[in-house]
Length: 76
Image (tube, rainbow, N blue to C red):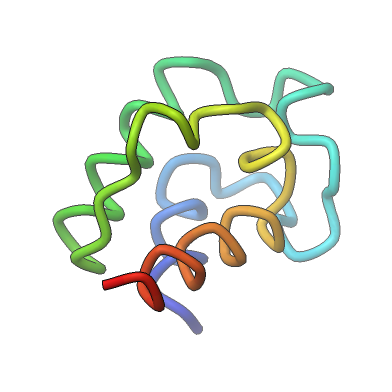
């Protein structure tokens, strides 16, 4: 299991993040969750997410979050 998926499941263990594609739209994760997620990604994966990337499209699904993290890792 990826570290990112572990982080998400620690936040909400009742959500199937691999299949749910409307996390923001369905209010599964909220702004507090996003702040927590960003901090955990920075601490555990070593990727800093800049403010300009904080748009709903980047956080609406596990796949979108993973793509964002992968893209930012590649930019380093």
